[in-house]
Length: 497
Image (cartoon, rainbow, N blue to C red; front, side):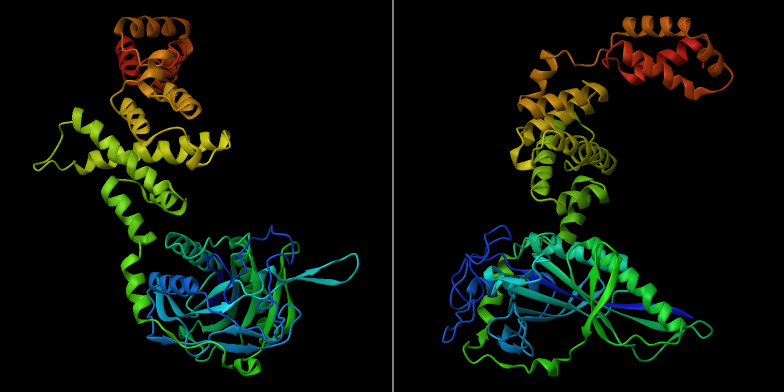
């Protein structure tokens, strides 16, 4: 029997606020010494009352809008009751029936709701002593929980969804959404739906779902779901139905393990939080809607349409912080260089589509491959670069007009990364420019032909690919200064092919 995976995700995102959700303690990172960012409110001391973080409300609304959600006119908080050592009050302040956002969509995946809540503290299990320590720094950190519809159908699709969600949250400034640092955590729900292969029909009712808790990387989400598909499939093959349960993921063994039978909403005994007033979101929604930036999907499409970047290059720019702005600055400067030398324009000054694609490919390749690689070698971030957008555009123009060959262009870019100097000055100072002297190319080709009769014989036998071997030889002799096209034409001329 075949099965269709039915997958839904619950994503907890730490909001990028200065303070915690219900107190003035700082919103600190995981490297902060334990129990140094705490107060009576976030440690649940008797009589301490919560005060709502207004910035968290704004970021929650902004994230909801970015996910295409409806923002209700009013929202309120509830108490979610359960006992655990990391929950000092014995309840969590969350939202249940009046969330801050609902009924959204990211691609084809429905967003059921997004609601604000506080994080629990962090349990630290000491293997040597067998004791459990609690760090309350994380207690009351501001979270936005995003719940999807069960619309995902594969582990790969779940991973891609989370990557796009992370990009959106970073783009709108709602969260750093770094999974490795715990700023974005995922609980994945999965069940298998039998498929009637003969009639091509699905079973009418969903089977019990399994929840995999606290997955902290894209790889973990993908592998945990793949494991569950295999495990549950084997159970159905034995005519066993997996009970609805909560499971953990063992990263080292790459298996899930049962933690407890799954709770229902009734187990949490939700009731309205009496210490917090309901939220009126009308004005907040208006304000956040006017400040919503260009979202990743629209930005990728614009980069491809406006500058001729490839899909993969546009994806790189959008995902990596600061690269979209730098790439656009480079293309704007490159346009000025091209405008002064290239007259292939349509009426009204429009750049021909073929030329746009050519320049986009040139710029995208050097930015996302060579430049990124050099920054990594020098252990530099984009913000630490010495190269200006204007100098990078000039560098690209030198390549485009044939002033420098690709081999020496790599040397020139390395010098620019190290010094930040003007490419034309470096080109002259280090004698990296291309040499189109026909006499030098002619003499070099003649000598190579005389010294390599075997390769000449192969070309005369029809192996024309060997011509490139001679071109490479010319480039080596001239230290990358010869024009490869001129060298190839000379080889063909002297061999009569």
